[in-house]
Length: 211
Ligand SMILES: [Zn+2]
Image (cartoon, rainbow, N blue to C red; front, side, top):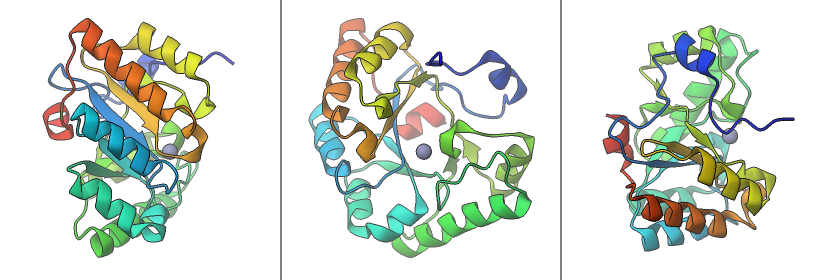
């Protein structure tokens, strides 16, 4: 199957209310699916070295399982977003299913983080008009991406290809805070940062890139 490093044009045209790229010509780094005991701390160490603030799309059930890792990433100055409670594909979920996934996430984030987020990203990038409408009711901004690195395929050459060919000065890039990318996440982030330096691009904070 052909890998789609960039989102499809029809998706962008049909859902102009979603965020598809950074708003300030700086690069936003995002991590999906954490927190995760085998990768979150590796990622935090690299981000600290690079002096970059990222947006972590957390899974509610992982916040519940790993509250101290959640605390660590927030106290390091990173932002979090809602990636549902169970990492459920919402494309075929009814209103009730969507509502439950979002509110269960909000409950656990209120309990453990002490606040809610304005940012949402759908699991597996699957969305439809129903989800778009529900997100509006919750006041959530759907943050998509302009660069999918496929780090979860655990192949550094794919990441390298994606970054070299599809990076832009306003990219929103997706990496994963999960065991799938555990073996290559460090090298992936290093090569990503090197490419940005080489091109004279800049990283932005989640607030700068999304407001
Ligand atoms: Zn995910």
